[in-house]
Image (cartoon, rainbow, N blue to C red; front, top):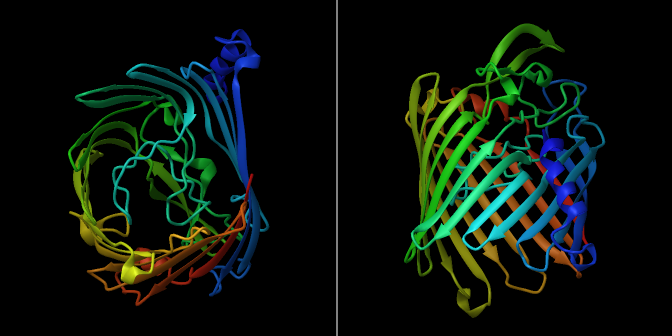
Length: 402
């Protein structure tokens, strides 16, 4: 499917709306060395505690002088020392873009982000999570799509047609971490739709700004990006083997952010229907920034958000009745030094997950990123926290940009 969507790029480049020599060509990218260390042994004796990997992401862009036409290709790949599932390649973007006044058309693989909150992006539904890349769910796979937007004084309206689905990958059953205490068989994913991965998805989104308020409204109809799990009745190395099951999903969403001086007020809410059952979820809170704290030239931001699911403990995810708190320190120096410290607290079980992320540029072309995540005070009835109880880790990344 990605091959079929890329075909128009070759046609455009060969026939051309402008002479080849007139195209503006841009190339940039990054290479990354990563080291991960897990503090506790995994669920299986053969699981590794230390991992190293290398990754690269490159962007090649062809831009017409008129600004109307562009072809952008952005591949990503990683090679991991132990986890062969984490050794993977993806076209984050491979798209043709046409802009004409208020209209913009995109054809190909692309990434689209929706949302305003810090700890949980409820409304972000277009792209599948790159589950082997990062445990925070921030990394996404490229999604084949046709997208058309029109921007007028009444706002921006965007329609999406997505002809194929991408499954979520899971760590290697033998050596991989983050382990869940069970094995997911990626090769036998199940779907509610008879068309399986070929089931088309549709979405529409409206955005506008009203003074200090940014508003987003959206509707999605297609295959859910988040699977549930079905037992297979088999066991591998002492762990139950499960199949991922992807149901059909209808979802309406709202996201709002208000900027009031140093305050950011945020809200995301969804109402979704799966298997004829409707569920409401919401997350919201604030971020307050102390600019130039004590005349130091640095900024400190305080973040607090509440996450709610009407099913609470019965929800098939860890955010049924939780609060997230965080502190972001930005040095505002030439090295772009920043530190983010956060905690997620389950108000039903008192389970707490802590995280810290720090980054700093080294010279002109390098960046060092340090990340640590720790699970503490695990409640007996908190299944997600128990599954992650022994998965505390430290992650070091060194990026070279060119």
